[in-house]
Image 1: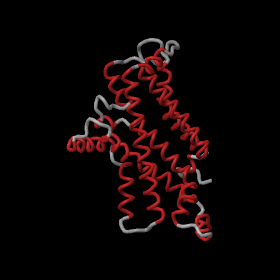
Image 2 (image 1 turned 30 degrees about the horizontal axis):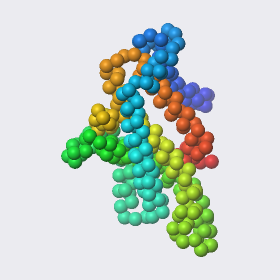
Image 3 (image 1 turned 45 degrees about the vertical axis):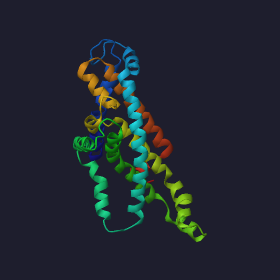
Image 4 (image 1 turned 135 degrees about the vertical axis):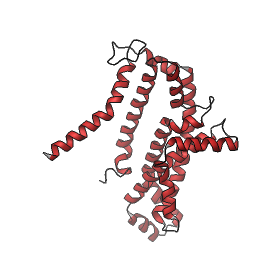
Length: 263
């Protein structure tokens, strides 16, 4: 009986979480100019508009620039922090861990507003620097987590065997350890890239008209128009993110990297 109740609860939660996405996809194919559910017909006209709308195209390019810079820098920093925390027990380690995990509990609008003030003080509000820094702060903990779990899954005997065979510490790092944790680093980069691409709250504070990212452009669009174009681009983001995560889990083993599956 308890098992039936448990899985019924799980099923209800999954339906509750996925239902908004189903509604978005359904409204995106509505042929009329109203975001009606259920749709009164089927049309892909709004997907065509979403893909050809100039503001979305420009914002998508900006998002790709920010995503590439933020996720790559986060991979370098997060991997370094993961190695330090995993291999060394030093004074201030707890403080470093607290600082790394703090972006997970601090509201994103607080982060965005803080970087807005910082950018204004440094006169950096018209470029990508402040946006990249804000995204970097938000996504680095996820990379650190992914690499840390990968390091935990690496058999220490490999490193010891390499050292016993005469490998230098740098040789062990670059020829043994890094290749073994590379899936974790790639998985961390991918997670950081997706989070950066879809980040809205902090981006709203730090982007300008020339550097607005796609979520900000979508917000500005829906303030002026109420047609299903916004549903179409949202459906494209949902679909592409889902496909990427499924492929990444298949080829990189994201469940194991994130510590969901210890097998």
